[in-house]
Length: 240
Image 1: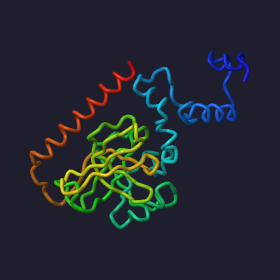
Image 2: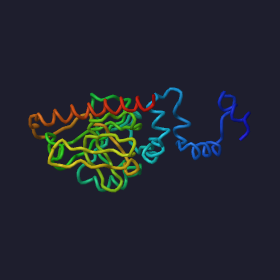
Image 3: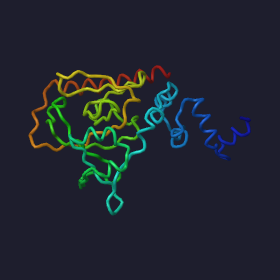
Image 4: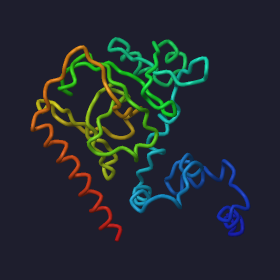
């Protein structure tokens, strides 16, 4: 590629075609979505550092950016309900518009009409005090960069299906570590490429009152926040 052509791209005089974008994507290890949709000049140093390290969320999660959804007669997003019985089918059909259209839908008056939500029925007691069979509503997360360590999320794994866990990002290893509120359940890592969707916790509905939050659970959240602060400090020190 001649220098004048490249200079034209830099100055906004011309725009690269799809073949050129593919070449840039392959050379720099950055997804085409990132090149087209993200103004790199606005990124923080830590975000640029992650790109340089090869952790491009668009690249690793490109398959999940196209979300199958449904709308009402006024073209407003519905909230689809994924019951416990429907979860096996959801793992196969989450990206199929025909399958999503078959899910029951409803509205919640207190959530933002500008964001996308979905409700999942959880099973088990790994997230106590949130009870087994509760209905957990999550907000769709397109850019995982905006997730914080300690955020509770519904995570759809391509092989293992749906789990409701506390997430911890590990950019260097290109994975998330998933934690339970119930200390009897062990934490486990999941590679980014194995995750299909992430929905950040908004609220839940249960037929039972929750148990009081234990001091251990409060301590866990405090430790998770401290770990996040320490990682940010360490990243800044390495950049400098």
